[in-house]
Length: 503
Image (cartoon, rainbow, N blue to C red; front, side):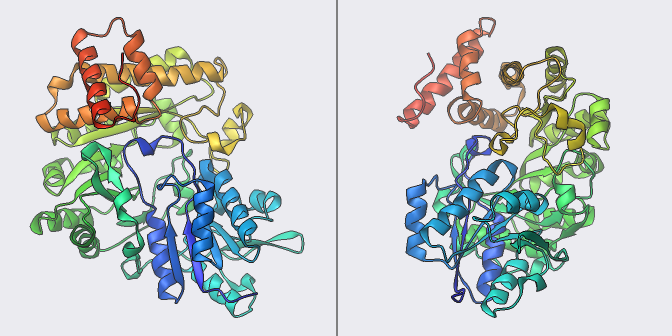
């Protein structure tokens, strides 16, 4: 085998229209892995084919130009089909390319992948890749046995070899990064006038036990963090060197350690770091931090997502959210009172769901009063703790549909088509209610929500439902309909090739 010198990190060209409506999001995991590979002496191409919206001919040209010895890609469940297709495509271009697949789906479903797609996938990295992938490349260059490298799965002699799990990386401050390889102009946040957007990571892990989620499994309910000083210095560098104006934290619970989180906020305030933060955290942490929500805002936090997930205590308990229904309302009120954008989601399409239960969830969402609420179809990750309870209701094994938009579970008393209509109806009704009460928001939030409305109508996976709301909404107040039409016309003027103006 030829010596490995060049490694291409390529995202699969998968699109579902979910997060893409708000902006273009870089793959921060590749920034870390590229840094580690480069530190180990390898030349790296950071190629975000997904965010570039590249087609297969584009990908061919990029691979042929770089001539990689290794092509590595990443996949969550919905993108796994395209990830495997990408690796097979790389081998068609050059059969000598070593192909590597990582991330959460491959970590848990390596048996299935290697049984059916071993012609495309040479190695699977299970867990974090910053140490494992460079060690694999060095091992292959030395002609040594990859069985000696922790954190791998691969085919050998008709079976699957699984090496011991690699230990988690604890010195996150010491990991090299490759921000200079990022193609910055494409990463923008539409809701804030196409501001330059970075995805950043201040911690890794999740200590919760949510039964439907992959993260607590991937991280084994562990949590590690970068120091506040290291993280804030990175935000300063991203702004100064790369022009970043908005950063989204990829962390599941960045606020887990209150002392560290307060230090981050204090540093952001003291140093006047001009980067606005979008983040997710736990309801519990917001309640804990009720006394410092003003510091959140002053420290640059503009948008907080908290996972409500369910409208009944019974479902919350099934999901093992470890919260009470009324606590979600309290947390959202705290975020709103701090003049921070509040967002949540509700997971629908469980086996016992009906149009009536979904209608109750919509009313609860209105009562909670977040600025944004999204109604998502339960995605039964095949490795999640909840999967055995849902398996008999799984209507398709096409992983491309496991994107939280397309229904995968068939409820007992609804068809998939009925459920899809109900999901659309939920969004219509919630956002109609929200825009009827737009005057209750602060001036900056009103402007933000008008941008959100533009995204919903013209860019999001909800565009069809939102536009149908205008055509069918006979009971919609005239001022709301006029507002929606004005936003549609404004967007069409700014983007002549976008969706046609709303009639």
